Amino acid sequence: MSAAETDTDGGDGNVDVDAVVIGAGFSGLYMLHKLREQGLDVRVYEKGAEVGGTWYWNTYPGARCDSESHIYCFSFDEGLHREWEWSERYPEQPEILDYLQWVADRLDLHRNIAFEREVTSATYDDETATWSVELADGERVTTRYFVTAVGCLSEPFLPDFDGLDAFEGEWYHTARWPDGEIDFGDDHVGVIGTGSTGIQFISEVGGQADHLTVFQRTPNYAVPARNRPLEDDEYDEIRENYDDIWEQARDSRLGMPFDHEHETDYGLSEDEIRDVLEERWQQGGFRFLHSFEPGSILSNPELNEVVSAFIREKIRGKVDDPETAEKLVPTDHPYGSKRPPMDYNDYYGTYNRDDVSLVDVDEHPIERVTADGIRTTADHYPLDVLVFATGFDAMTGAILAMDIEGKNDQTIEEKWEAGPRTYLGLMTSGFPNLFTITGPQSPSVLTNMPLSIEQHVEWIADCIRYMDEHGYDRIEARRESEDQWVQNTNMLAENMLFSQAKSWYRGANVPGKTQVFTPFPGGLDNYREICARVARDDYDGFELERASG
Ligand code: FAD
Ligand code: NA7
Image 1: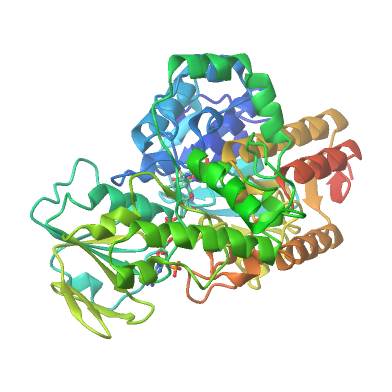
Image 2: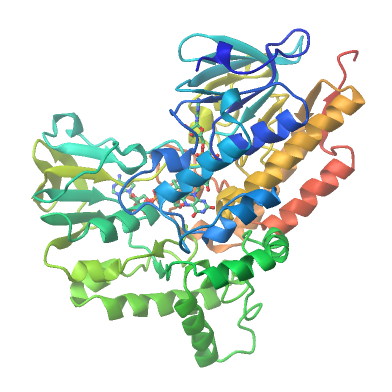
């Protein structure tokens, strides 16, 4: 369906549409629904061939979410979360994609979405307070509001290894997995990366391939997910308490409705702490990070060391070969300072298999990809298939992939050269009427994202309604408010343990990327209050203008 054919009746006066939204994942779907409900003429551009975003692209074996299913969905519409029933605690990618397609059908969203259309650039015109958005095929669309719903984890990162183009086998990045089943039966498969994705892939494919070689740079703390089917009675209970569940999740640091046993470990003996951890270890998932108030685990080095040591011990207990076990035990970063991965399928036990081997590429870095495998500084590993579970250019990659030019011909790339600069993660000064859903310096990836996404979508929609009701045609973040917000976010992160890890939160995974902590670590609960106060105070910290000046 081409843009010209999408069901829009043309924007007011001098624009084609009122709002252009980029992306048709959780964010783009809800933003479209919300703005259309407000009577705006909205056009969504999606470079994929269907809705789903993350769950359209990440179809690798073992892909599933690590938020619990009953909260990894939309909460804004009672009909949606009461009617949809998840099959298990952590659904797999196909089920999540089905859910998002079901939502798009239920809300009749497809008619405003143009698929296989990539936005490549956008230019702001201060005269008319409008954006001219350009697509890869050269088409241009003018709009009042420009909303990026491009995702925090949608720009795959592929390390620039010499020799990849001469590799004679098959290679894939997990975020651009080919359609259809791949039979690894007789293959010697190599996988680079042991983050959340690598851990899912390895425990799924270990035993399927003739041999699986894992190239690990940094060992990770994987906590058991304790996945299982969701029983009917359990679902009945969820439905009965859904309003409380959502309220508790919204009013929490991570957007998850999990109580924590104790605020901190104050006054607890080491054994008492271990008992708390053991009980939460049995519950699994992010309930383990809620053994104590998550903020205290992520900022109190003594408590964190007790938690980290607890997990290290568990890892040693699962791996037969002590040498391999030591390679798998994280010692370079505190638990939680990198995104905590989940273990759905006996990840550490996978290394007890004869047909699975671990290569430490921190000790012996990868030199190059050869025609038939990988060469490290210590050895050569023949491979038929090479899988890059090497993550993403997170938080900024998808935005900076477009050439976005604001006031005074300044591009976002120039503006963010020393790291992203936003106010609330929602707007960046010099780029009026451009809203970034789950943008840098917002809670985003430190939370159960559907709730952060809903909060941003509702805030943006309310803001646009306020502007329309008050006759404003442009809104822009004030530079001083932005500076304050960036400073505040950096200070919070410095006071937590995040600074002690080379993480994608900080862009440390992408060579040459400016390293700053990009999500807002102050908690979704606190952040919601700040955003609500800003809106209540007539959008304090933003510059609002009327066309009539
Ligand atoms: P996305 O789903 O990333 O959608 C963005 C869309 O924008 C994509 O479809 C992309 O094609 C499109 N797009 C980007 N640039 C352009 C352009 N220039 N032109 C046109 N289209 C464009 N979060 C959680 O909270 N819990 C989890 O358990 C969880 N698990 C995850 C597992 C994986 C493997 C990954 C990769 C992420 C996971 N996340 C998880 C984060 C996940 O990204 C979010 O939960 C959520 O799906 C983001 O939705 P979104 O709509 O904001 O972005
Ligand atoms: P991550 O968490 O960024 O993991 C990427 C992995 O790839 C990680 O182990 C990296 O090691 C490794 N990596 C990256 N570049 C290289 C090079 N050049 N050499 C060797 N190893 C490398 O991405 P995921 O996809 O697993 O997870 C991202 C999010 O998506 C996650 O939070 C979930 O929500 C899903 P490193 O640790 O940097 O040493």
